[in-house]
Each structure stands twice: as C-alpha cells, then as structure tokens.
Image (cartoon, rainbow, N blue to C red; front, top):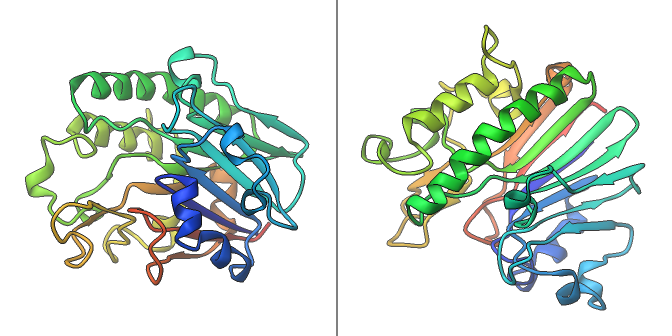
Length: 262
C-alpha cells in the first residue's frame, strides 16, 4: 500500500503545476493533501478534482483560501471522520480520517506559528489538545497512519540551519520536546513511529520536505523536514520504502511517499 502526503499550498495551484498529471504514474493508494486553500464549491464540477478511479474527500476551512485537508483514495472508505471536537481547529479544516476496517488513514495539518505570537499560541493549544487524542488512538488498538504537515522539525538533521532557528516557530524547544514525547519509546513517551526515520535513522540524510520561497532556499537546499507519516507501533514492521519527490515542484513542499506491506 502506497501513501503519498503533500502540503499543496493550494490544490488548484498544485493542479496547474501538474499534480494530477503526475499522480497516475505513482501507483498510489492514497494521496493526502494539506493546505488545499479551497472550499467544496471551488472544486465541484471540475473533473481535475474527481479523477477516474479515485474517491475524493475534503475538509475545508470556513475561511476562504485558507488551510483545509483532503484525501484521494482508491477504495471507498467504511467511514469518514472530520471533526476533532474543538471549534478552533475544526473550523480551520485541520483533520480528515478515512477508516477501512481496523485501519485509519489521516490527513493532518498542524497549525503554523510562524506568522506571529497569536498563531503560535493557537499552535501550542493544538499540540496540547492533540497529544491526548494520539494517546487515545494508540490505546484503541487500531492501525493509524497519520500523515501531513506537522510544522515541526524534530532533530538538528531535519533542517539546514538548525543553529539559527532555535528561537523560531517550527524548531522551538517545547515543540521538539512534544515530538520527543510523541515518538518516545520510554515513559512518558507514546511510542508512535516516524515512518521515514524507521528506515533512515537520524544519522542518515536530511530528507527535507519544505523550502522557503525567500532567497534561494530551494536552489541551495536550505530546507526543513516538517512533513511526516507517523504510524502506530503495530505498523512499525510494515514500513517498506520511503522517498521524497523533488523532480517536479507542485508547491513549496515536496511529496513524501511511503510504502507499507498492507
């Protein structure tokens, strides 16, 4: 089973750059998008967003041109969930879950705090709220693949200029500590698995997935790894291959592809 994750920075923009021409060549089962920046009324009636052989599900933000997530799946899910139960986050379209028996595939868009203190405060509220949710998901015994833009670079290797970014959103000490707790295998860690790092430990390769549009970040590969596929421990041994697609630029993020033996 192949899962692709991409922050599209606007689904219509990514489509114009060839995303849906590229997709049929990828042999994927799921394409999980974040920051679609579109509402259903913007997409309805356009065959681009209902490609043959795919089931499309979206959770858009109430604010036009903002946030939102989507999942294109080969199989129709048994259930579709799109509410976390907190209006602040549900109104921004941060979460979409497709269920297939005991398997859940989730497209997640964690808030960014880079635009100022108010957005950082919202991000911090999300992190505080979401960790218990992840604990409950883990306790459920289901298989979860939670993919998307987590807006946190976990380790020094996960961004080019880590020394200069220690006071910037996305690499703040408390954000990194949150990731430590999420992925930690000893109490109080939850033991979730960073699928990419399962195959490529933190001593191997940077695997950046986002580059600022400022300066020459892309040309100089001054990137961040902030897009992840985080899975429950019961899927640890099912991770088979990983890749980051850089041959085509659909947005300021790169698609992250992971294969699972499912």
